[in-house]
Image: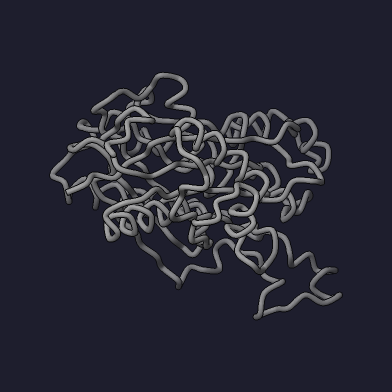
Length: 334
């Protein structure tokens, strides 16, 4: 039976950095307070010419290059995003066109910060069903277009960026061992963009209200994060008869560095086995995990045979986890 894993990883961050001093001026708070409460020093901002598809394509190109794969050979292209180019068509179709991946089936997944894991599950199962092929899974967010600069709960947290992975055949005994997913729609109101969809179509009133901006119930999310991370991580470890001590690197989505380090202390994850990239990126949603994987690979934190645990909690609420036995990118078994 063919094993499926990551043949290449890549990430892209826009050039402009928005530091805490810039945001603090609009929020009328001390920049140090932002750093102390979040651990974030800066977050990236897409320029006026960049949409989610543009960021996604840049990250995808890096992943494809590392994998030694031509976009024309892709069979599947999945994009996880909460900030699509348009309400329709799928941003994945825009990415397909930018890359020239004309053979690839292309569609979006709307699972917020968990979107990459949902896409990884779809890609692995799609390829396993076909018994062949290559897939591209991308997370891309341009949150800056949906932020209220006066909202202290969201303005300091979210950044723009993209991450991507090429999925394909890898040596036996390596690759994606399993992906577990979950959702609780009763908590859908915890994080949302209230207007602009079919429930509240855009009109002058919704624009005046600022209802096209991200709204977050911060206390509810603070409660949900450790609860659902415990669930996501606990389920996948139990399914494989493993403990956290068996994991070489935990790669979570990146709400903010302070939250992650506090959770690691709660869960018993050593800081040197935790991937944290939010200090200079902020929360980049569905892009967080693939971007963190690309950074860990580039920094030499991953070696052949490492057990890698991915985990995310996102709006919806959604959550997921994945267990991977790492093999260095480019080790295609085909």
